[in-house]
Every structure is written in C-alpha cells, then in structure tokens.
Length: 423
Image (cartoon, rainbow, N blue to C red; front, side, top):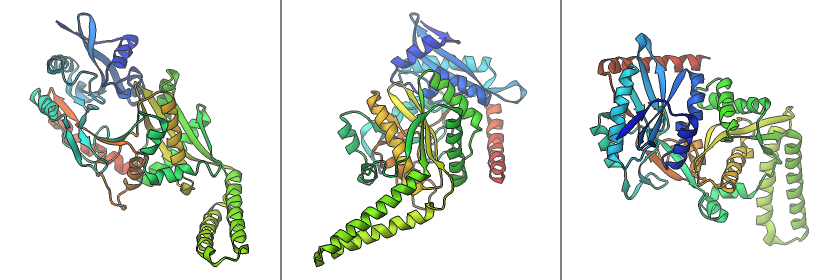
C-alpha cells in the first residue's frame, strides 16, 4: 500500500533526492525555501511504500484571488518515469491534495529528454520518451506544446556538457573556435575568482543589469539573488564566479603585445628575405587590430571593471550555470569564456558528471540577427549535448477557474513587460 506524505522533513527529503537519477536542484529543499522570496509557499510531498519514500515533489503554491491557488512542481516530480503505476497513484493523490488546497491546476515541466538530438537539432537514434508524453496525457495532464523560446516557466532546451572521460577528452569536445580562444589562456591578466561577499554580489548584479539592458531580459531584484546564493552556498551547493579587469594590467598587456609583435616584424625585416613578406603582412594586420582595440580602452578611467559573473548550483551529479551576465564593455577580452571554462574545470575536478548551461532556444542554428544567436552559439561551441525536454503539462483540477486564469495571466504578463521596458 502507498501512503501519501504531506510534509517531508529536509533530511529525509534530500536523502531520497540524492538517490534518484531524476533529481534536479529546482526540486531541492533549498530551492523551495528560496522561492518564498517570490511569495511561493513550498510543500514537500511524496509517496511511501513499506515506510520508504518512492517518489517526492516540491510543490510551489501561489496564492490567487478568491482563495484559489495553483501549484508548480519545477522540473517535474522526482519519480521513476518508467513506473506507470507509481505515476498513476501519485497523480491521483496529488489531485486530492490540490483540491484540498483550492488549487486550480498543478504545473510540471519534467527534466526528461524528449529524444536525442545532434547539435544541429536532428533527431538521432530510436530512444525517446514519446510514450511517457502520451501516458501523462492519458492521466489528464494537458501538454502545453513544444515551444522553442523562453515563454514557459523553464527553458525547454539546454546544452549539457558531459564531464566523463579524461580531461583531454572533455576538452577535445569543445569546438575548435572556442578551443582557439581558450588556448590563448588569460592573456589580458584578468582576475578570475570565486566570490562570496556583498561586494561580489553587487558586482554580479552589475553584469546582470548590463545583460538585461542589452537583451531585453526582465531581472529580479538583487535581494532575490542574494537570497538564492546565501541559501545554496550555506549548504555548499553554490559558487559565485567573477571575472574582473584591472585596467592597468589590461592596458599593459596590450602595450606589451603590440611591442612584441612590432619587434618580431623588425627581426624578420632584418633578415631581408622576400619570402617573409607574407608573414610581415600578417603581423602588421595583427598590430593594426591590437592598436585599434587598445585605442578603445586606453582612455577608460575606471580602475577595474566587472566583465562576467555567474552563480552556479551543484546538485546530484550536475553543475548548473544558473544566473549570469556579461558587461557590454570589453567583450573582445572573452571574459565569458574564462568564466565558463573555470566552472567546467572545477566541476570536472570535483567529480561532477555534467555541466548544464541552463537554457537556450529551440532553433538549432539561429540567424545572426536573432537576439539569441550570440549566447546560443557560445554555449553550443562548448561541446555539450543539445537537449530537448518533453515540455510543460498542466494537471487541471478546476476547469472553469483554469479557463479564467489563462485568459487573465497573459494580459498581466504583457503589462509587466511593457512597464519594465518603460523603466
């Protein structure tokens, strides 16, 4: 017999999640506590069989008007999705629980792959979860479609970098274009480090605001990110990576590089060999490019500039690059490459199996005019698996109120986006 549990304690809940291959940091106890900041009420529920947990879920309750609520289980239940009986029993228990809570629906977006894709979005092999999608529909879950963008609660696509094998094997899977950049190392003497102070979080938020302005993304207030980092970091589940430019160091690096290339040109000229003319032209072009870049930075008065920053979450066998941004200044210094590469190296050395780049679009090769082109191409070239999840499902428990909700919420979101742009 199964027993539905309404309030699983943290130690028991987390112990179960660590044993389940379908765990996700968004189902963690800590994530539920963090979402209180955004006025969600976390519920940690599950099923026991023979006094042992066999599935669990974080349900985030959001209060609505007239005493109604809805429940959201981010990245779906922590359950064996191959066990139809278990899914069926849990679903029936959740329906009862939702009605007791006056919840008009339960939303889930399982972290389960739809099928296997190559990096260009082509389906490869026969392994898929089409049957699971059909089974969830048969239990009353409404599938919300196969969106390609960021319209839903969580991105339906991401890149997941395998950290299996030797470090050389992991590195070899990175695209040659990105390896070429990484092979140059930290040539501008940027400061790359893990931070945990209020100042570091302020620096992080500075890059988030820059990214928001550049890409039209709505950002949460800094207090949310402070809470996010504090809760996960206290359990040693999060790191804050910062890349900062000391402008004196950067300027000197350019001066040294320009001087070095010019000296090389003079050395070659001294040999007075006509065969070296091509090499001289190449080096002269290099000097021209360096001097152009240097002319753009030599008059910058700032002593230091925060270029890139990312908050990660480490959970189970994965590391996620959850929140991050890049400064619009000095983007040619490739600080974002250094930041991601540092995370990748740390994840590998700490024994994690996967680095999840936490979201991209469902257009495998977006046009260069597409706002997502830059970040999609960047993540793609890190050599991860292009991953498509099965999507969102709504388990409706009050059809009339669900209809009203879906008419009003899109209008509210449009107003929020409009007001945000005005600011």
